[in-house]
Length: 255
Length: 255
DNA sequence: CGGATTTGTATATTAATCTAGACAAATAGC
DNA sequence: GCTATTTGTCTAGATTAATATACAAATCCG
Image (cartoon, rainbow over all chains, first blue to last red; front, side):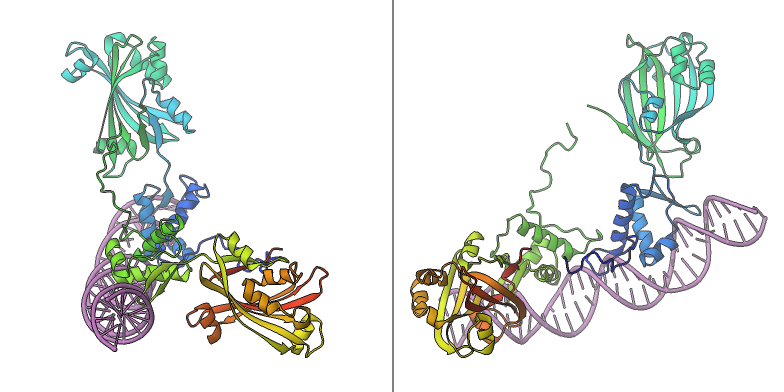
């Protein structure tokens, strides 16, 4: 038998200990410990961490030291703090593949989250030169413009503008409102099999309207994804400009 | 193709870099890097490290910082520094099993090192009470006392005193001197199959004589191993008191 | 609205880490 | 033995990490 046997001399501490003078700074030790708790699921995404004061006491450390640990985690996008509310484990970004056949609800479901969305507005307007070129139609042709916000588990992910050549889908706006799904509305019109023909991606700070729609604090970034979608014969039928909340989505391009 | 391709933009530095403000102190980073070099064989046991000044420059830190890294390694028994000579990668301790059949030369050979030894002296003396009890003979019986030092790769490992009951092996001392091996000398006397009957282990600081024989600096420790060895019929024929240099040997007791 | 809670920010102080330079002590080679 | 080299030790100062308080600002709840 071992001299130390199995005697539980050390109390079964819930592992909230740091070691001073070890060559690893306290904030780093704390950050690693919290990151581990998040990584192995003891702290679920969306969960609220104890208050800074509580954790500082738990680790036996000053609140400022603990805050530096949180700052490191926040830097790495692992947690997010909001004044007055607390610090929360960040939801992992949705992995959003940009492929020929890309459907929001399928992707979100595939990530184990509940897809949703809001229909904002629909109106008719003439095609600008850019839209006309993208859709290969004469400039000034009347288009149907639809504004939408799409959500996962109730949090907005992307707001987007869709333009349809109006003559090809006269009742689309009503169908979208009725079914709540662009995909299903298009299916009803026999255009269910649309596919991406071209996609352009860029990014910039979210403007005020986007921050409102996506519930983003100031300074956050949106990824702007413009795509031209066509039917089975690769004829352009739709142009979309979507703005994804960059810290909630990771666009995935397979090569 | 990746945007960064395989262009070797960063020069092929021999990995002597440290990161400031990373939450890990410089000395720790250096210690870990050196330990890695030793662990993966880039620095062989016995090899001399560059001078402190050189390494300090290589890592871009002050000599004191580097010294703290070396202190940590020295603490862990990974390196050893001697003034005026340099800092050396420590030889790993010989694993020395204490079993019924324990032969120095076999053990050292088994560790891939060259066994050796020096015969120091032989004299006859009467048995003390302790020796008499161990060998189960009357107190005062004349014993043969032999002093030896045994080495591995030329570095002394253990100095030992052996007592034999003189009448059973009158010419042993000459045979040992001639063959250089206790084992072979005993074999010549038909006592080759001696085995450990009992072993007692303790430790203490090395005295002056031991430090001389084992080339130990002041303050080092010897493990004192007393064993009673017997013949095939378990009759005691030999008592030994060996002093192992504690930092060169690891005694191994299998259970 | 108003109070309680919680994160954010500022300032000052103490402790740990790193730097700088000088010199002593041991070793090796001539 | 003498000199150069290398590790050991000391003192002093600069930089970074951590602590201690205090208060502002945002959020939540009744």
